Picture 1 (tube, helix red, strand yellow):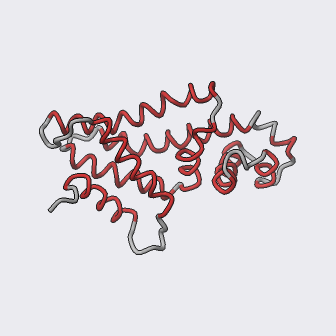
Picture 2 (cartoon, rainbow, N blue to C red):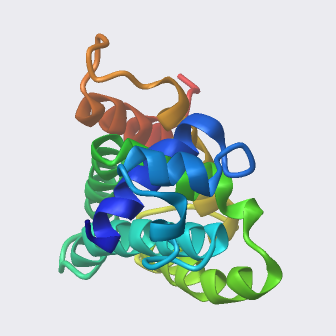
Length: 186
């Protein structure tokens, strides 16, 4: 039994029960450990939550940073980033759910550790939007607002998207990009 196995199981348990509904006993049971044995690997549910959030942001940042640093126009970067982000969310739905819906359960100390990593991730998106504004590709008065709106739309996708549904995650991503770039007006 590795720490990674425990974190994988914890992400699934927390996704199903919510952070406050999940117990250390539930997590131990999911990996066939006694609760006391679980404490040899992790000290608390807060430690597990912070580790899951760090893992999720690390994974997402890795997917996005390579695209954000490419030497292509900002609109192409943003479209590729949307695709990569939604694909990563869909491919890692347990971990992504914990990141998106349970971060508010961090205690103050853990929250303070989490925020810089989250801000770095959001900064990748803002930098691309600001690049598009500087190069006159985007007409956007508030890059931060645009990024928050885009993140909200993409993050909410995790609540309704089903791989067996009528659209691939790539199709959803392209439709979001088209909506962002062209709006709804005729």
